[in-house]
Amino acid sequence: MVALQIRDVPEEVRDILADRAHRNGQSLQAYLHALVVREASCDTNIGLLDELADWTPGSGVTAEDAVAARDAARAERGTVTDTPSPQ
Image (cartoon, rainbow, N blue to C red; front, side):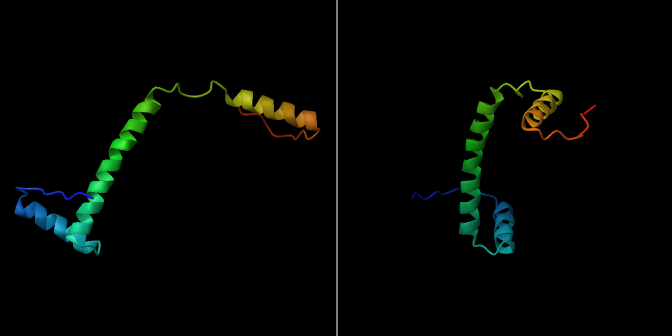
């Protein structure tokens, strides 16, 4: 593992972070470690979202198509019910 050092952090920022760590029952070191790891994982999520943006939304199947397919399958099996179709 590597060590990170951050210089010129305002004292009030350090105090806020130390207070958050204390409230979470963590040392400042442990709190900042978790914060850095969590922040690094966000980049992975952003990359995934970028990939998903290229997908075309939906399959083009409507609710009516799904109900018709269900009803056809039930009729084939002989298990037709009186479930109303969506309006």
